[in-house]
Length: 259
Image 1 (cartoon, helix red, strand yellow):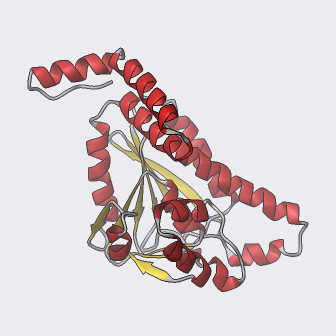
Image 2 (cartoon, rainbow, N blue to C red):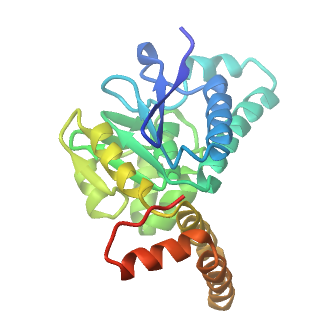
């Protein structure tokens, strides 16, 4: 059975669920396209303030289907290149999406599933979750931005170990290394992610969009460039209606009501 991406909502949070349990929620072109479409629709919906990506059942995502990859070996290389472009377009849409995106991980996040989680702004994982860049185990190299994310987040030696040796790493260790935001009991990752989303949903959407853009720009910017960008975002947000509401609410010691 082909996988799908289920879309539901809880309050102001859109929940995207990888649904391919017979194949451990393996990814494929249809899911990439559905993910991009869902984010595009949610970006233009002011009622949606955050997104959670999770997997159906007890596993987050096993990455790409090895059966599909084996079949693609008989095709022209462009077939696989186009498939990876679909994945990369989805990854890029998550990274540049102006609202917070949270990965809620149960069980394993393997290969492109690990890359998918790393593309999100926050990762909430069950304490029995396992993360593995399994590409080299089957004679392949990473995709989905996994090498980019790990090389920036971890010391070179550890990134090399994960990517070259295909070492499994548990949630507790990744949390200690700063790659996970929350670790919770098995079966509770989505609930914990929803609580985090609820906190984010109470904040000014324009301010969160600015923070995400600034974080994305920082690694490639000089200090002078980043300072200029911070100035421009700050001034724009100060003169936004939410800036006035936030300051007034703080001075009046009441909760702010952001739009």
